[in-house]
Length: 217
Image (cartoon, rainbow, N blue to C red; front, side, top):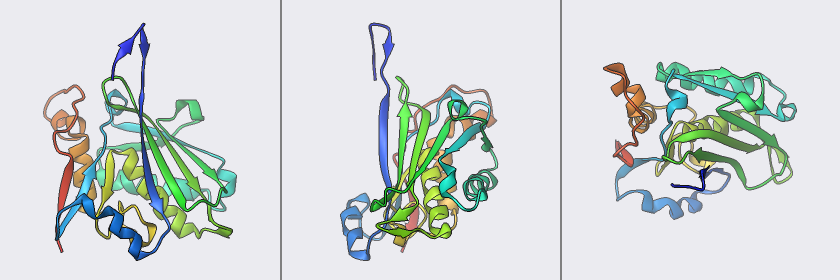
């Protein structure tokens, strides 16, 4: 992260987040933890955009969806679980902290999140891309909802997990519910606002922890 000639350079963190695959593909993610530990990675931290406790979102190309509430529901679920972060739909893409784009590319990777960081390393904008079909088959709405809920987890600063929960990178291994461990991880990722700021006003700080232990099998 640096400035040169008065230009601010941003770093993009791309999380390949939702892959349709089979159980044997899970072996490539074994390095996330040691044996018998359920680990959830911490990726990033929001900066001043989260200072008021509100993050805005906007969906492009939503004509690919039959149900308009398919986008709103996952954001509402995260807001309800967190209690301290409120997601509000923006009127246009330029005013959104989180921008979601849908397409019909039919790729094996059906979800991808890019967290754009400022020069201090804090999230300033998030781009989520979701394919609504896999190969030539249209994805079920329940699957799209799980994928989007997973991607919002990345937008909140979470990385991947190595066990069967929402933040597993393989759709087949993803849990449909947001667990207490994922909520704890969001609080760890954004500790400066969601924990410390409740006691006294705090400036954004990057977290020390890089993972959260979600318990043993």
